[in-house]
Length: 110
Image 1 (cartoon, helix red, strand yellow):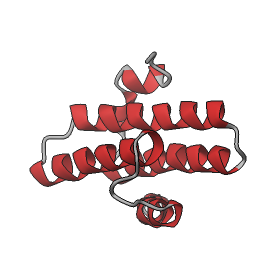
Image 2 (cartoon, helix red, strand yellow):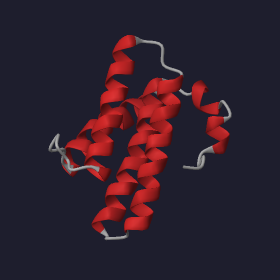
Image 3 (cartoon, rainbow, N blue to C red):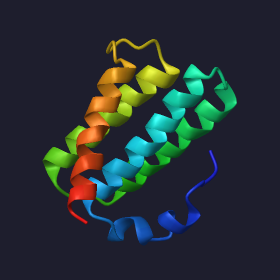
Image 4 (cartoon, helix red, strand yellow):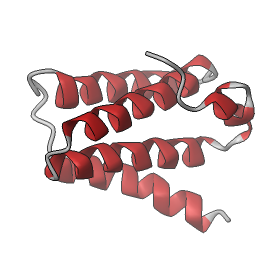
């Protein structure tokens, strides 16, 4: 998988607050779900890969144990939902609700 967010991977990502990082991850997840609904699987796959890249960037620079655990679980559940058998029984609505809280918090903090 090639790096899609080159500028963010170069260090700019670490400058963002955690809630903004999660809101940006949520934006990519939303794109992946929207493209999936439109049955454009190549675009959905690319958005999903970008979301994983952002999760990985966040994981690489997170030191707090609780956040590490949550991020690792989010990554695992995203992979299960988009590329696995959905053993966790995730739903589109559940993902939208989860990331909406971060989007709201990030916007409110501006």
